[in-house]
Image (cartoon, rainbow over all chains, first blue to last red; front, side, top):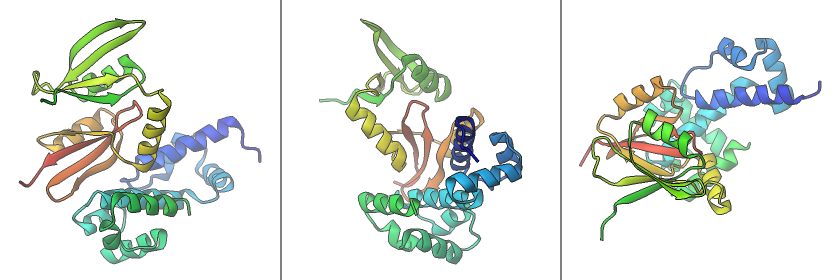
Length: 125
Length: 132
């Protein structure tokens, strides 16, 4: 299926919406409305052209937002975990380590330059 | 020696003024035509009308500034910061006005911080000092 300019713009709108609402739970009906596609069509296009499903993209966006908080020195890792959609510190630590290769507490101790590099490398995986 | 000016990089005077005045709530302090469409445009805090002026500096298209702004935006790093007395209240007020936040109020120990998009290509940090 060809990625027309109109489709590409709609997918970019969805990506921007997901990133802007990374602190909220993913509402698939809302996403479809934003895109102007049906939910099933949106998922098919998203996976086809962006190489991953919307839920995985949203998960990465939430982890990146969490990483940015930790880079600035967020005190309460459990609070960061909850806002990123993880119910426990342990689950968040596991996901964060999988994405970025370090634990949240290790990451928080890094300087801004090193932390930014890790976020960029991890977000492109 | 005093610090009387701070600046934020913008490309469109009126769009920037609409956000910094109409949304954030700063007051226009000076709007002086400089010729050729250029203006010396500053805003101040409504709480400190004689305080530090924020220059809306139209240098966003200068190549080095453009590259810096894009890098800061992509990396989620604020261009500058403003202090507020109640960050949760300010966050809720601005969210209701449709402002995009890239970080909701987050406890950083001495401060609680939030980051918003100023629609002019900059991330702006709001902070409340919570411990002294």
